[in-house]
Figure 1 (cartoon, rainbow, N blue to C red):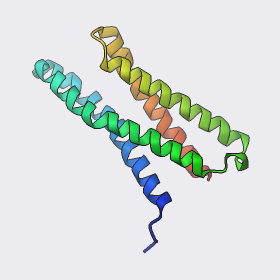
Figure 2: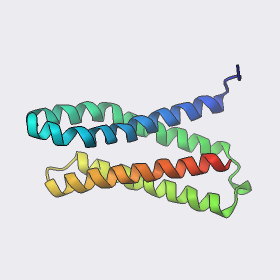
Figure 3: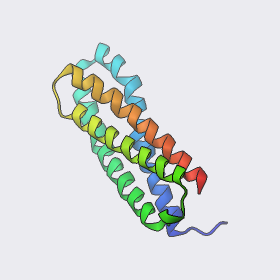
Figure 4: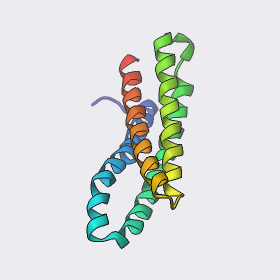
Length: 136
């Protein structure tokens, strides 16, 4: 067996947290329209349950991401790596801000836009992370 390392643990935690954050949004995107039609009063309970898991996962992904940056020699990376990294950080920020707006509003427009932008930002950040991981 390959020997586990602190790097592999950090990567595992980062991927697990990102999977919970992004995967949960995808699942809710499919679930919410159906629940809204059949049991609209349950939406608040479902959203609160997701938030109790999703926001800590978001925090873990941010912390493990910062930890990874501290372990990488960024000066050894080429310009394309830095550009992709900047794009990823931008999408993480957009996703977090949009999801926070979505979670803290009563406006139907902000709910819809926050949810959609949060998911798209999360998916883009995830893909940028894949690109970064594949280049090292």
